[in-house]
Length: 175
Image (cartoon, rainbow, N blue to C red):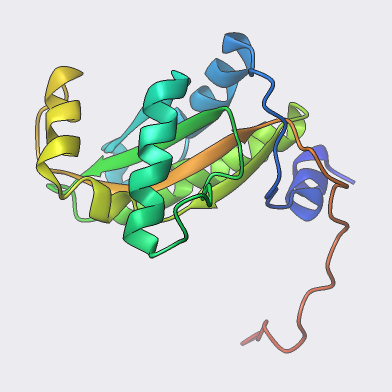
């Protein structure tokens, strides 16, 4: 079977990561996959922020957990040493879809590179705050961006989940 189709079937969200750093070359390959995701009218509205600095990573985790109402010691990024944050420019009508496709591409790329990943929500709420808007400004990101999601990225520290059968009665043909 086609290796892309195999990756789509085999990829699973990982919710327990080793603390081992991910080499920059692998992070760059995952990001590249996100940058090549389809986007409405090829506007390429998403931007990606790679966070590997442990202090900032832990701060993002704490704020994300607070937004979710999680216990103080819970890490919503499951100990992943790298967080890829996807935002998209709201001036483009397909920005949410564009950012979602970037995240999907990156999850598949991570899997094929031997990395685990998990899409984590609450980026929208984070980037509505002044603190996160200041982060964008400090990076030179200008415009009206919305947080689409985070990608927790790292090496799995668990048994890799198996393929889960698909539900029936989800495809209909009109011929």
